[in-house]
Length: 199
Image (cartoon, rainbow, N blue to C red; front, side):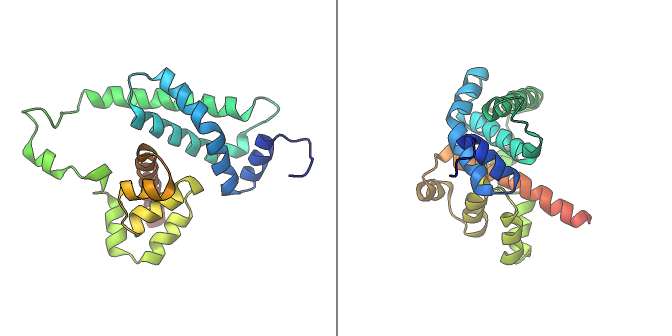
């Protein structure tokens, strides 16, 4: 890197603002451990899956809002932590609301139809219809518009049909991270498809 007076993080942020997805992925790699530790200490009642989900949501928000980051006001890690803090509060509030409506599948009162309909990580979504009813090229175009963090795992899962375990082994990611990224990719793709249909 040329001597510009910028720190490595400053340079990565500059590249991310200009649309360099690989720079944002490197920001993930640089900050994820400390962010995961922070969220883990903040929301001790949630398991690793939720912690990873909060981290992924936080990076997704940071990716969308990167143009608003002002290095003169705070460090990137501080800005990202503030986003994660608010995201965690949102998740906790959603969990609080949904827990009162939730029926455990282990409960003897759980309807058999509910248990039978449960599939791996919400496979029965609008994305199934994309895969089945639209050609692979259109699906790949949607996936290509995702941030780098989600693009590879989404391709492997939604186009190639790889299992979570296989994806984890191929990418070197933790299984929970794979599950979280695919879950977020599905949600983003749902929004992209719905937006396209509304146009």
